[in-house]
Image (cartoon, rainbow over all chains, first blue to last red; front, side):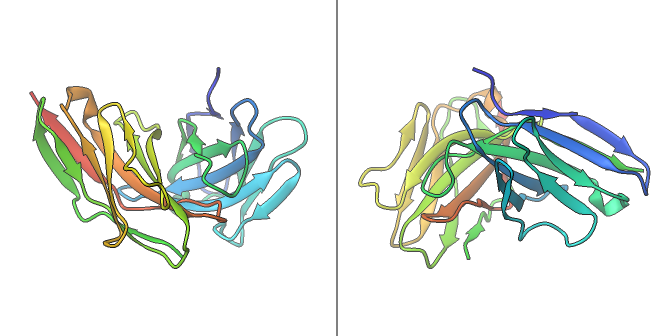
Length: 115
Length: 114
């Protein structure tokens, strides 16, 4: 019973390049959440998606960041023209449903380093 | 909006002893869920325990128990019989009943000494 999968685990990009982070939710889970963890801080919510729908992107920076969860395939968090301040750990979580008290299960994270 | 406060940045505990990690919260939601996650040095986030605001009993999961005091808005995590593998960062988080995003505290680092 595979958990939440994220790849790559580590990603190094130079300033101005694009970063693509992938997340496959747990089997049976149709709700995906992305969080960002800056060094020495807790996780901060970025975006919540269901299949083919962005439900809440209130935590996403207005520019350069986008997310999708297509009908087929993993959820993608895309960061265009990366800057050093984007260096962080990006976590994906999934749950079987959205609201209520369903636990969100996290993937291992992708650690993005911007040189 | 929810706010989580973890005031202990770091703690040391002797192996086999119990340790309590503090967590206080603030919310206007009448119904909510409280969660604890463990983040070892390898970086993954591991779910430990959940407490619903209307649950009558404090949650327990193996060596983890949650000391839930609703009137004080606190949800402290108790780890009994600490093991070396418990050394990690621990995060308290909450979510409103009809909310979906978790709000996290800043975390507490626990170091278990042999």
